[in-house]
Image (cartoon, rainbow, N blue to C red; front, side, top):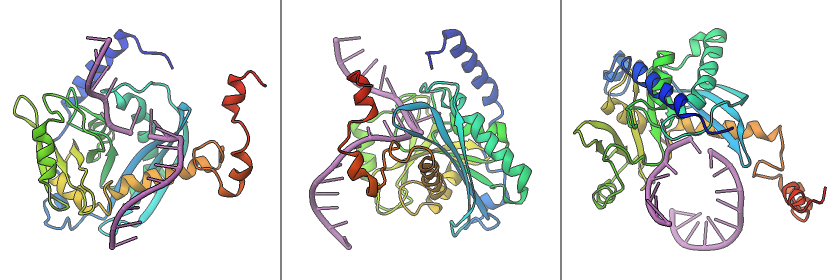
Length: 276
DNA sequence: GCGACAG
DNA sequence: ATCTTGTCGC
């Protein structure tokens, strides 16, 4: 996949600016106002997983979990071929089409299982142009979405400063958070200590049809470990997708056969040595 | 040249 | 995103 032209980048920026106007940053659902989210029964999670040397083929995953028990109700795995390269700030153009497809398959086959909110692996409003993957998927699907990033995107004045590190150190228990404030003063999201056992926070931001505070509260309610269970389950099921494809190349070889394989030069080594 | 760079 | 090994602790 080659680098996109400046022209395409400008087109993407313009599309983001256009779609951005359709983002709803407030709570639109009754369950979002409830102290314990009563009325919320299904939470979704989406993710794409890759293997080492391949940026083109991926496994697109959609899972739906029950709430508040977080048991898997539905899962969909699909091998897909990506067309857009990864460029920070334009992740949605790479991943959204396949995540939307998965949601549409579910809507067509089992509409009663459609999630009432979707957790997305990546940022929402916490983005260069305030329109990350979670917003993109939210607007195009119409579903409430929450963006959860595992790494801090240094944007709009938010940075890994001493102050930032100090704020992280001050997060005592799961549920504690602090705002990610842009230079403009606008709160783009929050850093959240997602569980008692994890000192490294996750970065939560609004995708669509939910407020920041509700997004943070809900994320905490969906965390058994650092990564929210819907996203975690999507990732786990995504990895299984590869076991049927190339068991010894996906980075987690079968222990029974690795003893044989590990002694042999890899295909890549053979190729580099012109031994084929 | 150096640092940043969600996934 | 993925790679990679051990290590420390409950």
